[in-house]
Length: 74
Image (cartoon, rainbow, N blue to C red):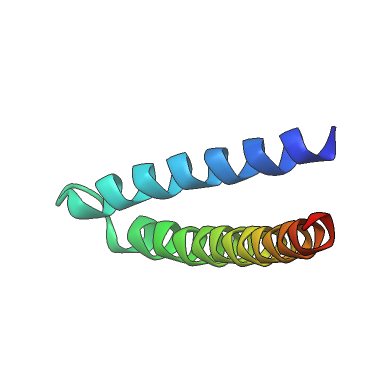
């Protein structure tokens, strides 16, 4: 169940980050709002990067386990 939650959070964070990016590219928002959105975007970016790094580490571990298993089978 936790895997779905992580995936869902990552996807939601990424969608929100894209939305913030679009909003910041528009010229019709005030400076205060832009700063708040930028701050939220930085936090979301950090969260997404953390999730990606954890995923990369997990994939590396799984590949290593597969290689060890393959060597034992031979």
